[in-house]
Length: 97
Image (cartoon, rainbow, N blue to C red):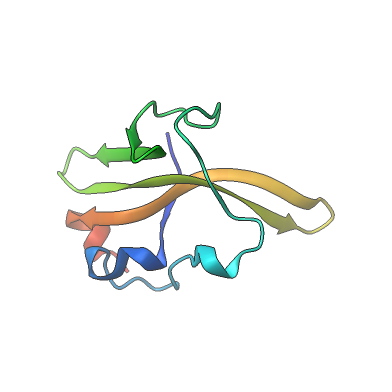
């Protein structure tokens, strides 16, 4: 299982969703996950970046790079997270708000 969000670089390849796309350039803690990283649990690579691709039963799909960043949680400080930065959506994922 992987969590992913649309990224600003997705452009027209992602749908128009209720929440704004994640903008990696606005984060001072954002980082790409390289293919050799232990965080590259998909074992898929494109241009030495860790990559993911998921297709679901209803034929919708999501694909993009695996990235890492830190989030602030109340009372817990900064916590590192690894997630997908979508570069392409199709089907129901594209159409959902």
